[in-house]
Amino acid sequence: MATTRTDSKKKNEKKMPTQSSSAVHRRLVKDFTFTGYDIMKDVPPKPRVESEEKRKEAETTAAYRIHCSKANTYPLRRVESQFMSKVMRLRGQGLADAGTRALAVVMAKNNSVEEFDISDNNVHLKGSKALAAMLDTNDTITDVNISDNQLGSVGIEEVCSSLASRSKTKSVKMSNVLMCDAAFNHIANLLEVNSSIREIDLSRNTLGDTSAVALGRILENTETLEVLNVSWNHIRCQGAKAIANGVKNNVGLTSLDLSWNGVGAQGSVALGEALSSNRSLRVLNLSRCNVCTNSAFALIAGFKENDTLRTLVLSNNPLPASAPMLIVEGLLKTGNTTLKSVHFEGVSVSNDFKEFAESESTPLKLTHGAVVANRSRVQSVDLPQINYV
Image (cartoon, rainbow, N blue to C red):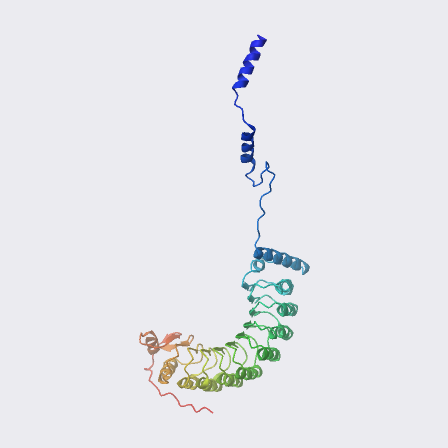
């Protein structure tokens, strides 16, 4: 019996399928190479090729985090995500001086960012010095916006000193940086020595007539500055006259924003004279400049000779409802055909003006404030003769 069971077992073993060594090898390769590592061949997977940009971004991010740690501040993802971009916008990120110093060290070697916006970040003197040191080394940034920070006179001096020697700087924005007349001396020096600057924003500071007189002299001698914003300052009639005199002899400025300053009647007369000679200005903003009806007539008299201005803004001025219609009629009587739009936002207008503005035959784009009922129909008047001296 024992022999019979043994023979039966041998027969069953013979019936079991057998696998060759090559078949086993193929199965093992199939089962174990899904990870990319072939254990049968002992060949490691090909390494991932990292782009040069990714490598630089990783190195910059690592350096930024190290400097943040040294400055006892936290790194920001908003910052890290823009190291390799052409535009770095960091407005309102709460960097303060510590965060600004950490960022400035890294940005000194950055060659990607061209537009650098660090506005509204509670930057004071220490941060200003760090930014100045960064600008001394970095030669890629062309547009600098450090508005809404507490730079003060010393901080402004530090930044302007660095910007003065930069040949690639095109735009400088220093709105609301605690700039007074004394600090403007640094701006004046910057504009005199750096002819690459095309745009400068000095709005919402405390610049008075002293600064305006200096600015007027600069405008007389520069041909490269194209956009100037000095709105929301303390400029009055004498300062406005000085700027107007600079505009009169200027050949490069295309946009001038004097809004929210006390231009008044004398300033308006001077600007009218400037427009009669200027051949480059395209946008003039005199919103909230204490321009009354007679002042406006003095201004638009200059349009008889001007053939470049496209946009005139007279919004929020003390004009009666009848004035906008009279002003527009006066403009049309000058024969000027280049002016495209006149703005009277915040100024009440008559029904006549509203109908004229909405007419398809109106040659100008007109905007205005509330419409009030006519007390009497607005009558056309002759444009006053202005004898400029």
